[in-house]
Image (cartoon, rainbow, N blue to C red):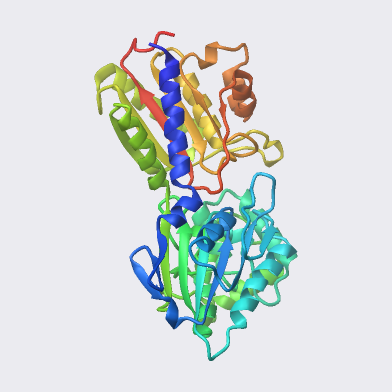
Length: 447
């Protein structure tokens, strides 16, 4: 039987997952208007009780999310902030759109974010406003408003340190939330002071879907403290390099409890998680099962160095073939999460973790048969360039290029491009990695 049949199936599984997480679909499936009422998930907002509806969006999926909402209900005003870059396609919206920098913020980030705050500040005491807030990956950097006395240059420097120190997104955003006027639930506080209700619709790019971490939780609560943030900065050896204005502000926060983020979700706010890695994996599973292939979702919380994870997962695939444990072949395994790659910052070309996972997997199964591996980052931009790749046991034998060399030099993209096995697609969101491993009985694929 041909490998192509199962390679095509793996690609269809991947694309089904990407499409399931599409921001337009995610909003359209969870928002509707009926009899003068706005219904979001299971909650109802009586539009007659509101004088105005403001629509805001932050993140890589800001414009498709806002456009999808506008197709259901036209807001009175609003603003979307999305990432600057050719890989992010702008969807036309009725509200203005600003493009800002990610991951390190610049002045335009602050200016755009302040436009949103100005609209909130302009809410009159005699009116009732509903703020609909679309939140997606990248929102933390894009929605940046530093405290008074801290410049954007200082924030830029802090974010450079955070990006390079090896911290997890949880730790990075714990620190970010303590140098902000909007993160860690503070945006909801600002809206509450103006008597506005907030409905936040969220696409998760965070493993485990912790709402306090996604975009640094502008509409959620936070339990971390200034002491926690300072401790983390010292653990990652960036405290002494952090600009003095930030260090002084954070030390002040340790002495003033009123500066801490809110410890509960405010009564004016409801948060709706409408797109996740699990949604993508379930869609991929459906495709496999419709093709008659038994399927198992391993985890949506896979983290760690991509090449080491590949060794572990391929070990499971080999065991399935050899002993039928933990399941018998044929079977499709699906996993998600956020793998990483350790590299020198200056030599960052082609370092996407999903490509490294697939290339390392190809090396592990080079002396096997009837195993197919595909992996992508669902935003379509894995590192720099292609989103991922597909491989099988023939991969390392189809070229004179050294798979180990290209893995060790973090140039997996070049390797898979040479074979025509890179995976590339357009996506307007990110719900982390999506990886598919099809394990068939030995001897199934012979060509």
